[in-house]
Structures are given as structure tokens and as C-alpha cells.
Length: 172
Image (cartoon, rainbow, N blue to C red; front, side, top):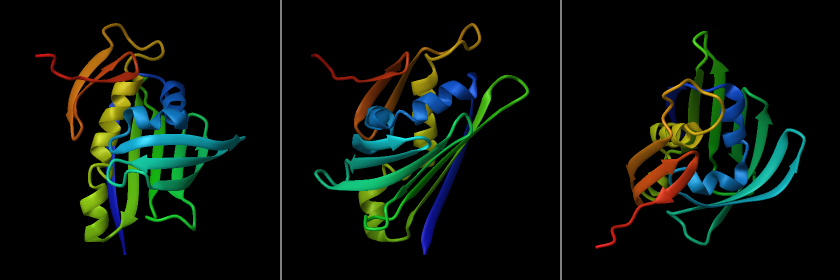
């Protein structure tokens, strides 16, 4: 059995900029919740191979294949020999108002071990929110566009400024 979760969001930016952020696989660890490492192993055309490392399993790497369709989809799924079996499906579509509607579908094993270890990663609403922070400073969005966002995550406070993630720590 599979566990399926879904989240949607609307962003005041063109799909091309959302696509750029999603297909920058080496940067996933900078913004995707629960992902502490992302290494691009190969990329050709609309296909890529990526290794992910999660906060839930330090040192363990998950190999995923990624298929990207410019300005409409980025899909990642674990390779057949990798565990856990996951699928991350990002879809984006322009709206009449000039915004981009994104939908994130995630699938993973329906097991207590998976949920206990990867629960921080397996929350599409957090992923959609983090992507919103990444793309906030990109492109030629409307005047008044959000360029800084501060979020409380499982890792503590995180600040997104013009698409770059910063972890905030107290100095006193």
C-alpha cells in the first residue's frame, strides 16, 4: 500500500521561474524540507539522476530518476533498487491572472517506520511553502513581490531572501 499526499499553491511568478528552481536538482537540499544533501549525478535532455540524503537517515543516500518537462512538470522517483520507494510529482500551470498554480503530489510507503523517519520530508504543504520562498526573489513578478520570508521548520528558523535559504541562529 502507498501513502499519498497532495498540496497546491499559487505563486505570483511565471512558470519558467518555478521550473528553473525545481529543475536545479543540486539546490534541493537548500530548500526542500527534510533533504540535507542533493547531488546531481547525470543530466541529459529532460532526464536526470540524483542522489538525495535526508535528515531522517544521515549518511544513507537515495537514488532517484528525474524527468522534467519545461514549465509544466518535474517528477522524481526512487530507482528500482533504492529504498524507500517514493515519488515526488511537481506540476505547474499558468493562470489567467499571470500567476503560476503549482501542485505537489507525493507517494511513499504506508509504514510507521517511513512516517516516523521521513515525516518531515513527506509533507507536501511544507514543500510547496518552501518552493514559494525560493521563487519569491526570481523573475519579473509584480511590484510588491515578497523577497524575504522567515519560516519555522523542523531545523529551526529559516530565512529565504531572494531565493537563497539561510538558517537563523541566535547570537546571544
